[in-house]
Length: 263
Ligand code: ADP
Image (tube, rainbow, N blue to C red):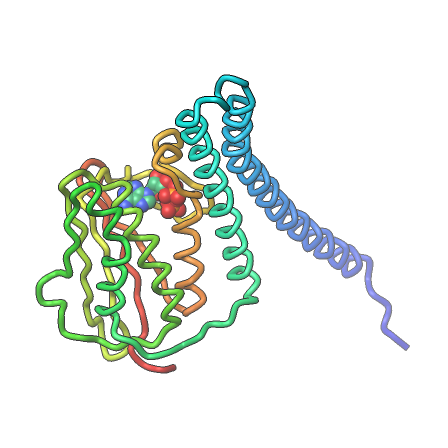
């Protein structure tokens, strides 16, 4: 026979149950708000290119425009660019979903981080040359260091960081990569630019999905607002982290760590 509970014990049980429920409801509310924000952001991001496409197609459908091959081609190029933008946003969202659900396994291999940095600079030379930005591996950082990570995912991190450094960098500026050995097990990779920089109050938030410091400007230079959120997820999946130091009008340095041993 179970011992009878006193009224005080019963009321304590009820209170702790009510508190637990309250905490559960609070955490459900947070998830719900998060979902709602995400859907709002997503719908806004997708609406912008869709409205643009609609506008260009309407213009194309006007009789005299179709007769003017040059004008028609110009409008079609705009349609193409906006479709590309939408595809980019959707594939970034796909990527983030996979990373968050842990449905993407890491394919760990050993590679030299400096080689990957050079390959990234090379593959983005169209973007950097356009603004006459010099890409440099900092002096003293040439000594090859092997890391253990998912090479293609780290390539994506580097591409996102270097593209941002070019997008928010100034004409004739510099993008500097540095690699430092922190200890026997870890390296620090930094990508610095001397561009527009980020104000102090935005710094902690730029890794959030869709967060932008200046919506009008960043939308003009393109991008999904998901690049840094993807970088953060990729590094967290490796058990590593990414951070940012920045000064408005001076430039930004993004740094992330990688393991040098196969854990
Ligand atoms: P986006 O696609 O908008 O570039 P990201 O997630 O890559 O999205 O970056 C989020 C925001 O952080 C950008 O919109 C921009 O405001 C800011 N940002 C990122 N990198 C830099 C940088 N190197 N210099 C200045 N601002 C940056």
